[in-house]
Length: 117
Image 1 (tube, rainbow, N blue to C red):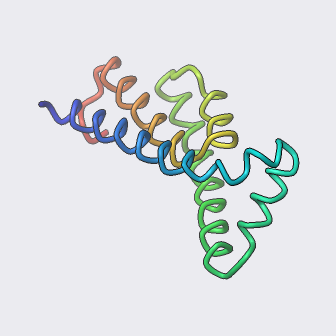
Image 2 (tube, rainbow, N blue to C red):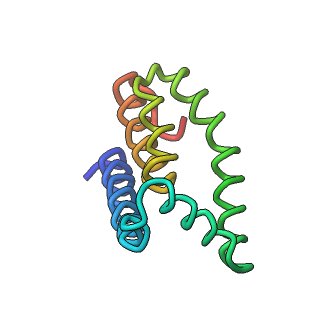
């Protein structure tokens, strides 16, 4: 397996693990409906110091990484950037980021960019 294939497989696996891990938390919120489920979810993110810590951590990472993702998508002529943004908000950033990285690897390969660039 080439380093390219290894990275692609790793990103795909990370996205799958993140999807399973995040979606498995939804059954508690789905019965509440769209609005009340969201209200309860965001209330739970502020419930204790640990949940506040991880919420702030993820939001700041999101704010730092998104401009980079936009720049990389433009630089490597990657389509579908709105899907990653919507996926970050509607599904999970931990799912969207590895999928973006997978797409980036494919774009780099397509453009013949050497590894490590």
